[in-house]
Length: 253
Image (tube, rainbow, N blue to C red; front, side, top):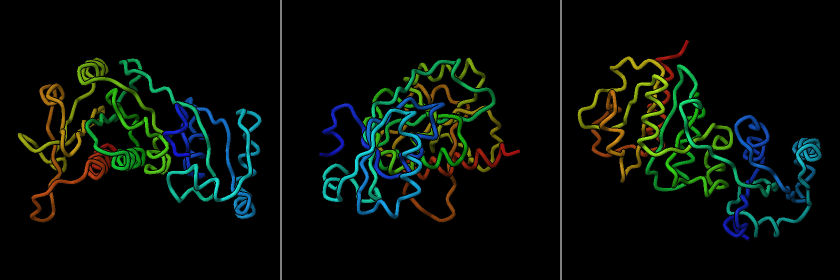
């Protein structure tokens, strides 16, 4: 049984993803229904099992011990370490100006081509300390298990919202944010500017780019200057990492 065969349920694979969910109840309402554990690995995972046993009564999930063959049929990856969790859907609320923290940094991701690139971007954005990520209605959170694995659990820890470009621009303008779009045409180097929070950073996919609405409403188009003569472009996840950490560096106190 693969992840998409759970109907609306989600399979989180490995303690990194499961722990991230358990530690993020303030921003994530996803519920765990049951946890599968490879009995042969139980001795090596004793600390994780004690943690899960302590959580199961309060959170209402069950723990089932099984074998490696069964887990292999359930899992989509091979790095789960013998622990899987069947979970429910997560509510991703619609963005409003009231959701937005003052003097923060948010990122709008659109047009990303695969869940691994998307997950990698979320991993970097969480590490860079962004306050939240805004997504278009169609996004990769329908592959939440894959995204959680690719993001080392960051997708479960991050506050997430949905909005189209027009709504996002309106909400962040109401909240007093400047809007920066990643791009080349009419751009300034991210390293030469002084981009104080509050900031909404908009990053598009390698093929689709950024919506016209964002570009027309951007305060600045920002680019990443390369250290060598390179005609190619960075992946969206790499771009997200460089830009978010540079904004963090400029605003670090």
